[in-house]
Amino acid sequence: MLADTRQKASKLLVVQVIAGTNSCFVSQLIYYFQVHCLQKDLPKYLSHSSMATYESCPKKFEYAKIDKIPDPPGRAMLIGTFVHAILEDLMTNDSPGRTIDQVRTIARNRWDSWFIKNKDYIALGLDNSQAVAFRKEAWDSIEGYFAIEDPKTVQVLAVEKRVEVRFGEVSVLGFIDRLEARDDNTIVSDYKTGKVPHPNFKDGALAQPYLYAAMLEKLDTAISEYRILYLNSQTEITDKITRNNIESAEQRVHDTWGAITQDFENGNFKTKPSRLCDWCGYKQICPAWVSSR
Ligand code: SF4
Image 1: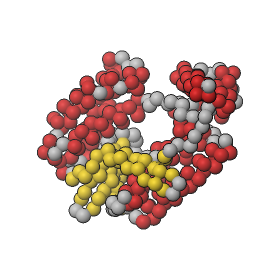
Image 2: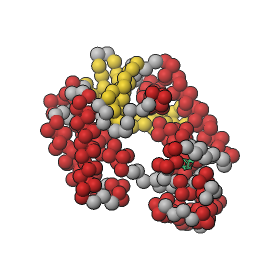
Image 3: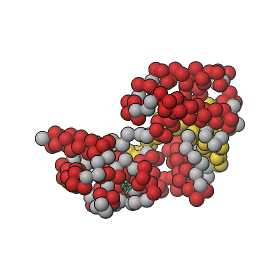
Image 4: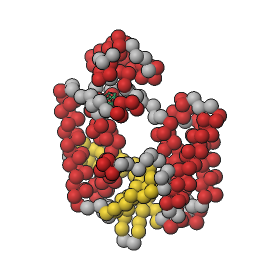
């Protein structure tokens, strides 16, 4: 009975998020279902992105990770997914095979055999010219990558490496774009298809490599350096990983998990309205916006 009610409530929520209805009454009705009918559990693990979601807005974290209301990825995120898949295939080739001709073939194969059937991509409903623009933007990122480095020179240790590590009471899961070796050092590298952050927001961007370094250290792999490759702007941010960076990453996990469990027990994930609300898939059901209508 509860499962059935939960399923119906979830469907209602999904329909509303997708339809983008602005009916205050429907929003409140659905919010009632959400609060009173859904069985809620804490997530089994955290990740960099789920912690970043909590930090940007606890309410959004609740919708995404506790209520599990789907928020389909948008165009920009899907371009990133496509580009990451292409680079993953490229870097699993032996070094001589990492050429621009080879990556063109990889991109075509990935598109035909996988991406064009991706349900989130199909849901974008792009017409022919929009699909061409989508592929062009992805290809610009690939060319941007080749402008940053010659992939033949990279000593790859692992790509899309799945890492799961326990920090006290919570596990953290991550998929590391690339681990590479240089001299005697191990470097964690990350591709970004978004913009280079303003210097005021640089710390947010670095939280991810610091977290991965802390996770890998617990698995006895010392990381001495990070590289973040901003493909579209053909820019690389790189620096050493310090003991402080590792400790701050561990503290971030403990602090974030502590705040999440407290909000969960109190049933009080607060809204945090900001400019990011304009890109939030939950705006139509968010009390910060519904109650102001
Ligand atoms: S609309 Fe804004 S305040 Fe509401 S959940 Fe989304 S990010 Fe948070």
